[in-house]
Length: 85
Length: 85
Image (cartoon, rainbow over all chains, first blue to last red; front, side, top):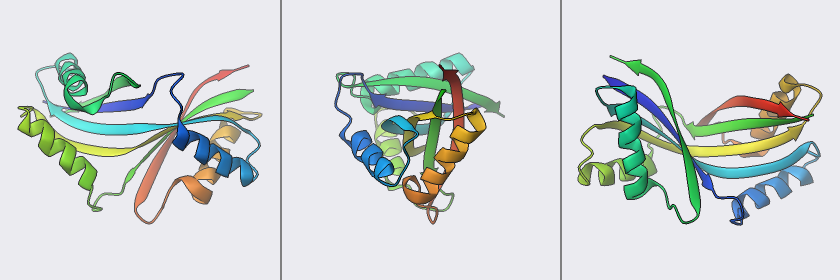
C-alpha cells in the first residue's frame, strides 16, 4: 500500500529565520499590518510503500535522521494522508 | 484574535521539481526503495490578526497573490490552526 506522508521542516525556536524576517518585512511594507509573525520552512510530500501507516511514518522519520533534517537547527512534524492502494 | 495559518506552496504538476528529484535519488541511493515519489515545496506559518478565521485566510490568499506564490509555476493550500486570543 502507498501512503502519502507530509513532512514539515522548520527552524527551531531561537534560530534566526532570516528568510522569514525578510518576507515578513516585505509584506508589512505592502500594508499587511495584520501580520504578527511569519516562519518559512520546507514542505516535503512523500509517497511511501509500506505495510502500515505507522511503518510509512517510521521510514520517513529515518529519512529525516539520515538526510532530510539538520537536527541541530531544525525540527519537523510528520503527518499522514489517506492511504492509496 | 490571532489566527495561525499554514501555507503550503509547491510546484504545479508538470513543472520539473529538480530539488525533489535530487533528494529522491539520494534517498534511493541510501537504500530507501520504499520511496515512490517525493516533492519539495515551501511551508510558511503565519500568525495573522483578524476578526474571523475566514478573514485571516483571505488575507493570506491576498499575500499569496501579491508576493508569496508564483502562480505561473506554483500552487498552494491554506490551512487554519486553532485561534489564539
